[in-house]
Length: 283
Image 1 (cartoon, rainbow, N blue to C red):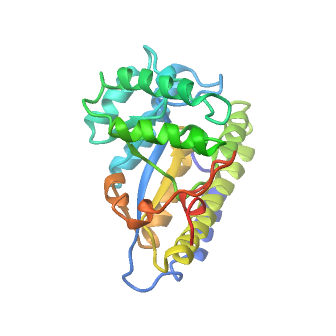
Image 2 (cartoon, helix red, strand yellow; image 1 turned 90 degrees about the horizontal axis):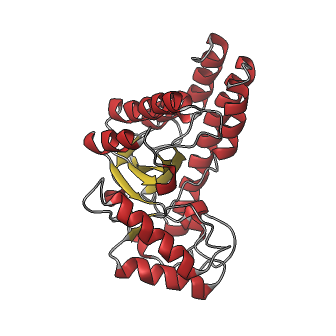
């Protein structure tokens, strides 16, 4: 399914109305794109051939726009049908990071159990990429107690990991599940409307966290976007990236983003929510 003419026209009008007037002429905002849950989620509805096509559509979008991304891999999702996709991803210049083996919620398991899961995934991923530099917490949950949070963070630092925070946290997964259900029940109009709503949502979130970064630091920060390797992005990531480019966003690597001093700020948040890095630090 491609965008129907009505949806495509409505999206074009929205994208025009959404910019570019909110930036000074020539000013560039910088963003690293990160993708969670590689090799991909199926929701029990997407067979291996469709999942491979989904994966390749998303990677091709990145390649077409010259965007080098870091993808965070859940080891338990790797199987004989998709192991080659990770190799293709790396061969095309992208980087993988550790997202734990089984995607446990640190709020619900012990620090020791969580660390064991990290180590299991590290062993698996080292067969794909010689150095696994980055780690991302599943659900962005860093632990519901200070002791648990600090125990895991200390382990990661000892192992030489760089923790990959997120500033633009869109929680787009709810849109994806609704989109998948509409798509695979042949409700094309509903799927189109969900996809268009998703793009609007992502734009609104990008603006929201850009403003929050300025409020916290007095300047635009190098943002880190979180999206997922999922079905909706294989169709609606392209118009979203087109909007970023039209509004003077420059895509950078995760390594370049992490050089922003904002990521050296103290993490003062302890709780059950997975929140943006900008909400974890002091103003």
